[in-house]
Image 1 (cartoon, helix red, strand yellow):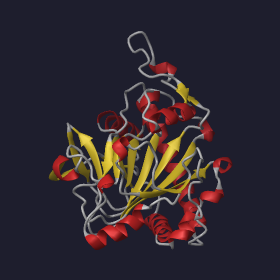
Image 2 (cartoon, rainbow, N blue to C red):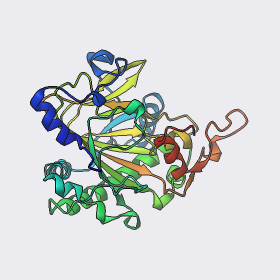
Image 3 (spheres, rainbow, N blue to C red):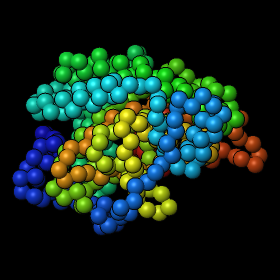
Image 4 (tube, helix red, strand yellow):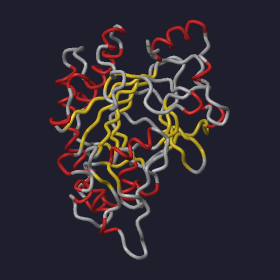
Length: 335
């Protein structure tokens, strides 16, 4: 059975100016009617070059507790490395269709890696205006190169270079998040599998959409990960739900957007909040983003950190294997 890719649907839709009915959201989800227009949400921006660690711990704690999202600048990943990451990702999605299908998620494959379109159970058969590519980039034992593009030829080297720089930023952030909870610097990372913590890259490709006011790229959700470190392109699209409304998140060139994910909310026993967000699409331009999900190994059990639990603060979440959490989430089952 041939799968229809959104990139191909978009080419036809842009010719006739309409989109298939399965992409039209219900009225209470349509961006046109549910977005606060003209207001860009200034989520906290944190300067990682600040030498005052206590100040960084405090500001990351506040942002993670009150917002579940923040942006970091001066993070030591050069703009050149970020530009190269964006360039090779864009070049992959501009390849002929059959070349992309060569690394498609195999039929019946239980994982998420590979080139694809559908990720989770679709509510009422509604679809998101996006194609994607998933593959793990760290640790080496978790990598399956069958899902990495062969073209452009510099794809692998570019992603390895970005990953090596990103790991340093991630370790720093996890340390600050740990200290914010009154824990030792390494305790959050240990609660996620330590050195086996997995880095899963996703590239989202949102082609131009003739009816952006009716469609969504990605439906409202929280990330399953511990944290997500995201590189966007310059096309506006990320929205966050705050105070009962949807707001656009300001684009800052070369900033990394950090989402608190479900596993971090669980580990912190609800002190940190995973961010509820969605993605809109653009009429003229292709939007792309490069989220990196920091995930526990699939067999690893995640639950509230014991030091944060006492009589006055009982566990609010079950302790369970990460793979079981993922299965329930993707199939819309209670946790």
